[in-house]
Image 1 (cartoon, one colour):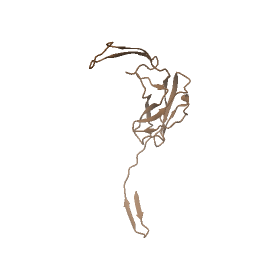
Image 2: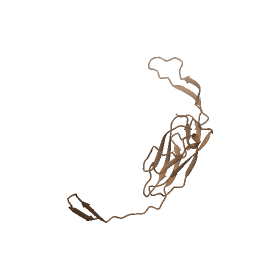
Image 3: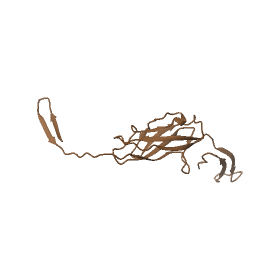
Image 4: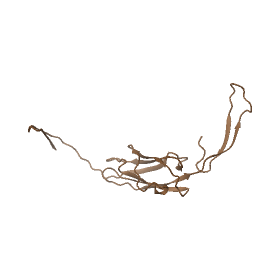
Amino acid sequence: MPITAKNNLGAEYKIIRKISLGTDSKSPEVTGLQTLNAVNGQSYFHLGPNTVVAYITETGSGFGKETVTADFKSIGRGSAVPPAKCDKVACYWENIAAPNAQSSSVPVTVNAADYVGNYAKPYATRFIVDKEKPAIKSVESSIKCAVQGETINFYLNASDTTSGIYR
């Protein structure tokens, strides 16, 4: 492939470079979709901001936030929402809140393509909406009266029937 450079005075420089162009006919694959609020493999939307992560395998031209979208219409956020950022293995949607969810379980779908237009199969899953706050049932201490320097252990009895208690 010849490359020519010419300045305003007419001086010209020409070089020939051999380049190899490859083809990318393989589609990316969305291999997982979850929130950072996953417990025992199940993802949860809580009322506050959530981060959703789509894991993508791509061996060709790559992908980015221009080529990946999520369908969040089940929580009132739109059907083709681009991610906040992507790296080489995943895309991230940040500050996704679910206060308008009308169901205890909502569908989320990710659509992805690579930079040359090979489309992945849509990846769909359901997230559980956790609108329940944990309840503290009781708090007990290891001793009733402590002296200076003594260690007191507190025991908390709490419950959360949706996503469980974080330790």
